Length: 351
Image 1 (cartoon, helix red, strand yellow):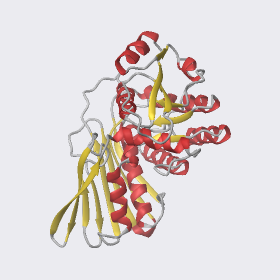
Image 2 (cartoon, rainbow, N blue to C red):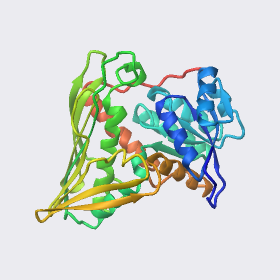
Image 3 (spheres, rainbow, N blue to C red):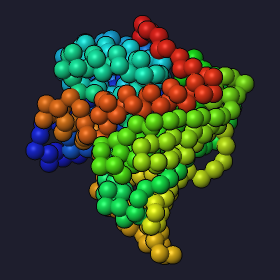
């Protein structure tokens, strides 16, 4: 059951589209939050929806996404479907008057991102791309250090997100029709962080690169299995970002400046649960651990950010604005095109 409501604002009624792993993670986080209530889940299968609802104490289960969107009690929807259907269901949710938290990447490409943003604007609904680390206190502390120029002038950003998945051509990770590959799935994190940090160094919410170069490996199922990109920003700030779904390498973020550098060992998950995380500041030949305390889990912060913005009648979140998401999509397009792998266009699916 939901925890005791100590929030000064009414709880937000959430509907969840899809019943996969990340949908379950988000559902647990809403249960832990003080701002949200799990009201319904929708799936292509009524049986799967009912099983998910029982497991997460959700009162309503629908055998289609259409049925969930038609429920007048649903205020906000979390879209956790495969990448290619994000745009279609986000637009439909907006047309149904539902506020939207959509899993990353927001869409398959920048053209679709513009369509989704247009729908949110025209229907006056909140929209946020679910890149959860953007809502965590660790990220806020990192940006503070950059703005204060604790490591001097920012010169180089290095961000990696990698894991080693067993090859299965039918899995979401390796299936091209499902938007598989590392760039869209996890490269979006490293790109978004580089743009965020470069922006902070310039006193802006984010920065778009003036130059993008990408390389990588396309596997036998037609998706990028490992890749890297170089981004150049104004002020000669350079970023090296990399991602991979079939390799062993430590996931890390490092920011190098004229007077020192910063290391984050968990830049994307931020520790997952409540507790302490560390930012390591290297300066004058010494390493200093800066502890960041979080009183709730990563996705709880994300759910709360949506609820607070909706109750304030905001359409965007400062965690990641629409312009920020659109800029991220443009960079991912360029990275994919450098590998001669063009982003798929999402398809309408009658679920």
